[in-house]
Length: 362
Image (cartoon, rainbow, N blue to C red; front, side, top):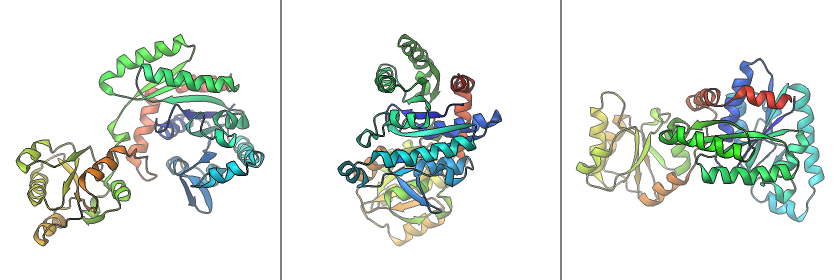
């Protein structure tokens, strides 16, 4: 069976989430599945293996042998520039080829996750098309939600792949807003059919696959945890900047909000603590970020510590913290079983797994 090369129309369209769900679904059909991300920039060293962050997530989620999912060409900061001046593509190809031979000999089907979009790696002559050829793989595109823009991006990426003699078996349109799901699914399916491109399904946007747990927020902001350390695994439901008076702010609390407020706004902090204490079911607040480096007075700090509410003290101002959280795409963490399980369910429910399998066997 030919390997499957999973590549996006752009960054952060959900390739890793799709790979997790696909591997789980194919295993249910009794297939042995190998996985690798041969090129990558966010590199971790795990048990002596250079691995992309996404490869670590997939390997741990799917209980794969870390050595088989190691990144053949790790690209830490500065390496691409050095390679450009001393381009030795043949050596890099040899490393990827060795991974391909090993995985194809061991598994019935190999899933290969590409970098952000089809042209990434072209500077090293290792674009998605180049790597797909090394693996002798067929390709599937993962696109973000939308109609016109999504179809246009898919058409552009499809042209790149087919011009380089890579067989594109089809597309999955991901992260569609639930309120628009039926309309977008129908329109994209028709639009892709007009271009002769097959759709394997459309997947709705789901908060659980987008929002992080408090511990991930701590890692991003690098702040000091001053309370609620036992609840860092709580998932946030939305982000709220509390720059208003407390009597106005409390009406916005709910849905496990992560509340960002200056550390010297004691009135807001006390209002948040009151709402947290009075909650009977789903907590209105998941955590608090105190900005500006302002540490509340000792009595307020004691209340925060005793409340069990995760509280992070940051030196940066409120705007900077809010902007950083808004701009960040929180990847699935290796130990985030809730998101991993959701990824498995969503792919299995909304994607034509049998159709993908059939296309790989033809």
